[in-house]
Length: 449
Ligand SMILES: [Zn+2]
Ligand SMILES: [Zn+2]
Ligand SMILES: [Zn+2]
Image (cartoon, rainbow, N blue to C red; front, top):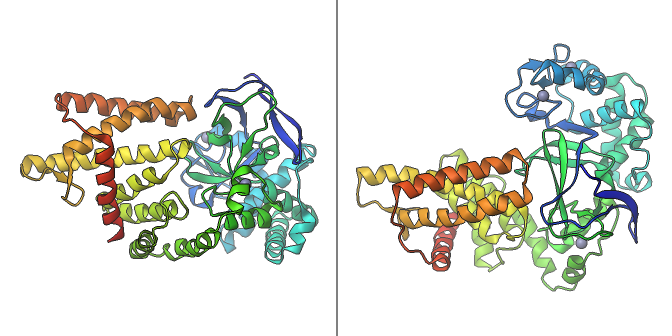
């Protein structure tokens, strides 16, 4: 692949990653195997620790009995990174599994033993971390565990690597933006932050892809966001300062700093925490946001709706799960790649609901209504899904070109379109706008009451 980025001095931000050619939206600027990564502990049985493939792995490391691989080849390839981790896992086995971050630290130590230069330039902010009591006590705890269980007896080396990790590690996310682990990469670590990122990075297998979210020109710098960009200004600023020791001066921050409703945002952050416990807690939080007319485009609407959806799916309440996901799509910014992911979720749930209801229609000809049997007709919902699926088909490949995920979405959409058109040759007319606003009212009632 042509080299489209290079490490350059970015004005006011130290080293950054500069763009060396004009780039189209959706173009991949960088594709590389990650230098370092670990799967989350709960996925160790579910995915291959080397290639991250999530088809049930068949080989287990016979020594530590914790990490799994899809093949002998993957196992062999991973050994230089796993060797020391394996020893630590065996030594720690009576105390349970080592935390994910501790395993990443041990892998980083192995990597630097092999190649001192790879992460030599990464910032560590060790002095600032020492001043943060909570962070520093974490650093000491994790580093001494790593040093103890690997028998490396090198706490200081682990401590300084921990500082590099806490500044440079990133969440390992699949093209569907599911977090499956943590990673660190010498090139990606060069990318500076903006709350209005122009690129997004995702991982397929263990290969990272950096994709442009907008047109870029030669000489621009790549920016990704280190934090959730929907967080209110105060919370976001605080998080960047506490974790990364800088104050963001992007345009979004400049504008939001002047706003008078920043304090409300902070109040509603606590609502998100309060909604974690149960479906009823979510419902209460959503009702509070709605009653206070807090705009749906703002944090924490999306986060609480997501929790609501997960609780609903757990109990098989697909109507409610659809309602929450539909509302997520209507709150989301259509230009963000997560919009396509959410819309795909709505599409899958909607398709499933229509199938369920179709079976009932055959048994009971009058039950043509869907979603709590009020207002929304099954045929209209089908028609809406069809229109949205066209959008999905033409847009998912902009941000997910050449990914298995993107191809799967397109396959699924085309299959649905073929089936739907076969079964329903005469489409009922549909006014998209008024249908969507009716659906929004109906789904809001479902999640808030
Ligand atoms: Zn594998
Ligand atoms: Zn092992
Ligand atoms: Zn900012």
